[in-house]
Length: 312
Ligand code: FAQ
Image (spheres, rainbow, N blue to C red):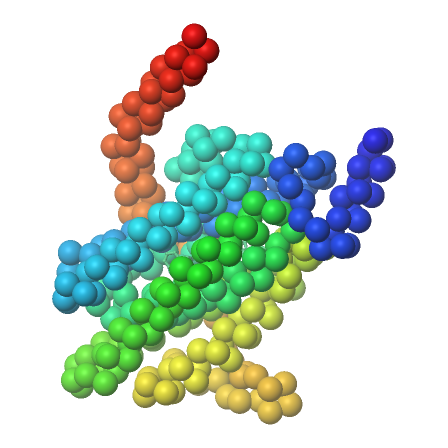
């Protein structure tokens, strides 16, 4: 097939909602777009283990500790499926990790905020996993097959994460005055950064047009942010917590909430590397990478030995 036919074939698959698979022809920019997004997503899952991992030793009961351990392990697993999906696009794991550690690749802004109290673990599950699912449900139908398939399992696990976080918030909100205040304080600190997870407003989102055209994203940043607010405000109200937004009010005409504007200057500072925990997060990942060198070397040496046995 010549290049025009290849392109027509690609477009026709998209039009029929068929997935694009690793061996299919795809435009270079589609491939680059996906490597950027899937790897940013993988890095987010792995860096996202750090703020919660910080609380595993301090979880208030054995049950909470077991649940949190399982959740953090799930996030590690999500990172691994997503790195594998990114590798099918023709980039190596080493290159991906190098991009993270040298600051060339982004990861979600949300993981650059500190976890100060136990209620933050509730707020992360409820709000951060809640925002993640809102964004990821559509990604189960993303046009690139390996990414779409990875998202199916990830969404199931994220749903459990969201529920465990909301359950922590319910218990704290029904607890002592101090516990309720701790839950409210966590909501106050995590609300706006959670809205920023959906990315800049549509008019300032350079990647959305191609993402929608190529059916990588099926909904825009603003559409998903709106859905998240509509879903989350009633959950806060149900447990007697208040979303820290004086502009939040029901709009009957649009059947959704009007809400205030996140501090976009803060968002751009955080994604430029200047958030409260950016340096600590990358230092922790670099240390883990260095400490894991012997495991990678052993695995490579075993694979080499195994290959020579098979060849013999
Ligand atoms: N943080 O043109 P757009 C999780 C960047 S997983 C940092 O709108 P796009 C699980 C963006 O990369 C959370 N950077 O970009 C968990 C671009 O820069 P670039 C992660 C951001 O791609 C829970 C520039 O700004 N989820 O939480 C952010 O169309 C609990 C312009 O933006 C995913 O990655 C941000 N928030 O839309 C784990 C889902 N927003 O690359 C542990 C997949 C934007 O051109 C505990 N990703 N930027 O230099 C996506 O859906 C999209 O990539 C968006 C951004 C929506 C994140």
